[in-house]
Image 1: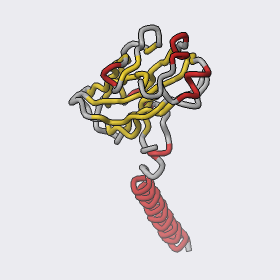
Image 2: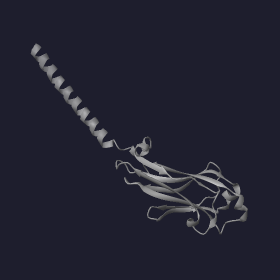
Image 3: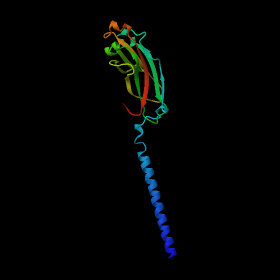
Image 4: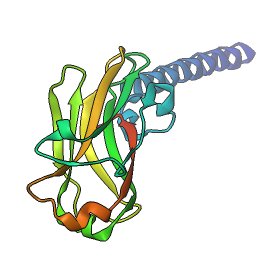
Length: 183
């Protein structure tokens, strides 16, 4: 009888051991299979993967009307990802620190973003904005591991320029932001 109980105990022990190993193996399989499922939903810690150097801010103290971005003020930003662990996309914002309301509503203030090969990446008009607003100047720039420079131009379009703007002023900060998903 004692032999039967001992044998029964061994059999139960082996069955429990097999179930434990199978459960652990299944758990590891699920963990490895779905480990990256939500990786693109977070941007916490992204600063560990991007380097960003900002140029000067742009203000309206010396801006003259012109026909294209070459007549405006410019600032250069450069950024890159530190490694190829993730796909990372860069975005360039124009943060409006201050702007006169007549200039803000006119559409005469324009911007252009060019890459380091002088290829136009994005362009647009800064209109219907007020102090504290942000304008997305360029988005979804696929970052690589070598530094890429982007020049941000701001100018007054002479076709939309009004002489009343001569006393207008503005101050724009350039900000870069990175995400793991396109926006």
